[in-house]
Image (tube, rainbow, N blue to C red; front, side, top):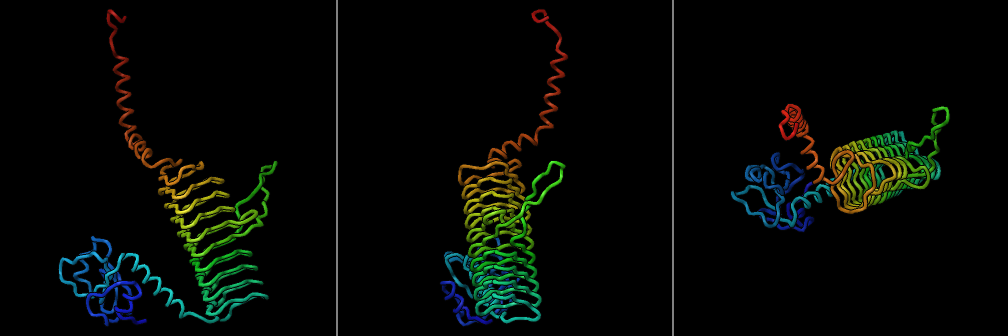
Length: 350
C-alpha cells in the first residue's frame, strides 16, 4: 500500500514541511528508517536520529524546532505519539481487510451465520447457532463453540478457543492461544478429604474494543457472567477467574491473576505478576505495582499500591527502607545489650 505524505497528513490532521508528493509504503523506527518509510519522533532522547535517518518522512509535534537540517519531510501534528498510533491502526486495518474468504478444510455448524468480508482459516471450527458479524478474521485452528455471538471487526488469531455461550462485542482482538469461557476453578471439599466439582453454568461477556494477549485465560462464571468491560486491555499469560468483572479501560500486564468474584473498577492499572484475592472490590483509577498481592478490598479511588500484602506506595517505600536496614539495626541493638549487661554497679545503684 503506497501513500503520499500529503494523504497521510490529511489522515492525521497534520501539516507537511517538505515535498508533499513523496510516497511511502512502510513504517519504521526512526533509527532504522529507510527510503520509502515513515517514522515518528516524540521522545527527545531520540532526536539525534532525526538528523541521520533515511526515512522519507517523520511525524513530529507541532511545537518541535529542529536544531539541525532535516533531510526527511516533516508531518507536524498535535501529538506525534498518538498520531503514529493512529497510523499503525489504519495500516493494520487495511492490511487485515486484504484477508477474506474461506479456506478448506473448515467447518460451520447448523444455524450459524456470518457477515460480509469474513475470513475463516483452514481447520477452524464454528459450532451450532453461532452469530458472527462483518469483517471478522478467524485464523487457522480457532475453535468457536455453540451459541457464541461475535460482533463486527473482530480478530481471532490462531489457536483461540471460545467456549459455548460466550458473547464478544465489536472490534475485539484475541491473540494466539487465548481461551475464553473455560470452567472456573470451583471444587467443594468433602468429608473424606476429596473435592467435588461445582458445575460452571455461566458464560463470559467481552464488550467492545477489548484486546486479550496470547495464552491468557478468561473463565466462565459459575452462574451469571464473567464480564470484561469496554476498552479493557489484557496482556499475555493472565488468569481471570469465574465471575470477575473488570471495568472500562482498565489495563493489566502479564503473569497477573484475579481470583473469583472480584470486581475491578474503571481506568485501573495492574502491573505484571500482581495477584488479587477473591471477592474483593477495587475502586476506579487504582494502580497496583508489579509483584504486589492484594488481600482486602479498597474504598478510596486513585490509590497506588505496592507490596505483598499491598498497601499505599509511599508508606511501603518508607517501610522497605527500614526493612533493608534491619541487619544493621540488629547489630546495633546487640551491641547496646552487651554494653548494658557489662555496666558495673555504682554506689547509688548497687
